[in-house]
Length: 376
Image (cartoon, rainbow, N blue to C red; front, side, top):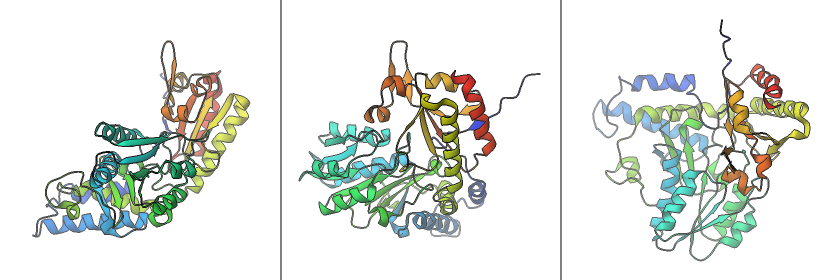
């Protein structure tokens, strides 16, 4: 008989499963409540009510008024809306944007696009932990600066940026400040007033909602151009008939996430995993990212002198991510590890293990028991 390979999912930063309560909340909107939310009749009313309930659930998680939440097709659209919307609203031309070298491609690619249109973009460095210095932000601001964008928490190494400090600097200079909170929403507090941000992006499939839905928080006095033009949906801020089904899913997921802020149990399991790795590998394993100011579920480690992709390939049944691309004659580190100054001979062995609500002690023990044979 063929041995059954145990499947262990440790890639929750890439995507989360749809939570059972989210799936249950969505069911009536597959068939029973099919009306257009903009229709003023019996079929449209339940759909409109569902969208507004979902908006309130998202706003409760972010600590803002519901009218400041705009539903999108995901985190990438929310980021594009923030960057392009502010730049165009400010007049375009040579408007200046400040960001960091460790942002997600959903920030870096729109920046590159806007540069082709004439934007000036400053890409700030980070330290070896992946943290940007707020003083670097201050020094980068010019009279032409229209937007500062810095992710709340890094998707690869989990490092949490000093968003509140940066927002203070942005306010002092009258500059709009955006944060990509795709990885932090539902894991740590993302109260927009505590963070001090003008714009914040949410990705549904990182918070146990379906793929294809997200949201952007827009502070009331923020000047921002619409990203999708058409009719007056979403109070005129995003055209297109609302996706009732997916919005309901994001709303319910946001409501459920309130109980998971801090992820104490997951954090303890993550730390136990790291302690186990150090016990088994000693100096042959090292940590990427900040040791304390880091997402509670994220563990990005280097198996020094080894190849992360090869380790994962041999670690059958375990879903995780690697931080480098390996070719016949070179190692390409991820831009994040490069920006942190990780040496190639160290970073080539990088693997990101990201835990979730369903991760168990037995799963972590299983991986710890299997890794020594695989690595050595």
